[in-house]
Amino acid sequence: MRRKVGLLLVVGLLAGMLAACSRGDTKEASKGATANAQGGNVKKIIVGTGTQFPNVCFIDANGKLTGYDVELVKELDKRLPEYEFEFKTMEFSSLLLSLETGKIDFVAHQMEKNPEREAKYLFNKEPYSIFLNKVVVPKTNTDIKSIDDLKGKKILTSATSNEAYILQEYNKEHDNAIDIVYTNAPSNDRTNQILTGRVAGTVSTDFALKYMPNGDKLKTVGEALTQSDVLFVLRKDEQELSDKLDQAIKEVKADGTLSKLSVQWLGEDFTKSK
Image (cartoon, rainbow, N blue to C red; front, side, top):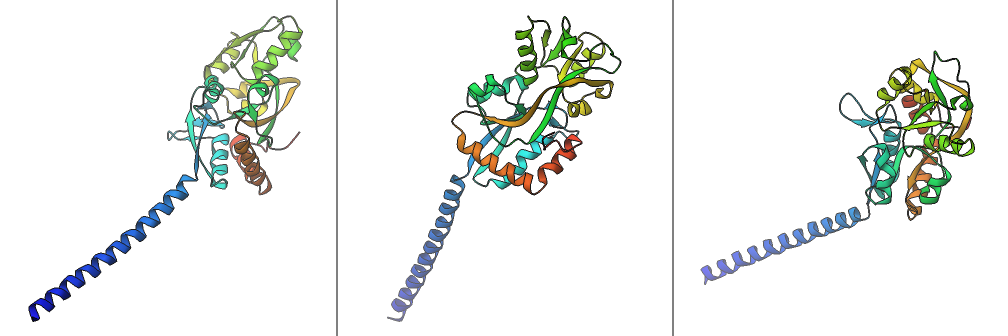
């Protein structure tokens, strides 16, 4: 009888232990389910950018993707917990096509509006930098003083860039007076083409010259061709994401973070209207 009672006690204890373990497992499983549910609310966003724009989006000496646009997106990511931003790098000329085909969700590459782009894409409303596009020539050049002096000359630009759009619009009104040369070559090759006289110049900004190889041998001339707001580019159906980006950009402007990033990476505060 004593042996039977002892056996029953052991069975009871084992049952109690198993029940406790079961309750513990259920509790842990519940925690895991909650965590998964919370994680499921975070939407991954693929951000398209480049690697050839010094101080804006480039690979540093340690092989790290960084620069003004990259670090800004990282800062916005911190302020938008409902999203997880992940970078995807590619040639500048491939960014808009990748946006159209859904390979990326927005473009961060110092992009500006123009009518052609606005017809196809959505831009957020709050600019994160503002700059002036001007004609760029070697410092030794004294003949070219405005865009009108580019008539009959070869001018280098990136295909699909806003600078290309400026030149194309000028050509529409002036019987294709400028010989536009399109390239996707890195900055050092572009600068070399200008300095060696293979092309007469390009269109860019004062801040961009600071970070171009041999940019100190170039200068901007003439009146500003455009004052451009720099914005993110999205697909037309991404209004919610666009609004959230605007909200976060306003925050980094208000607390001074955006100005600090601009000074750190671009050398000046390019976040305010001229």
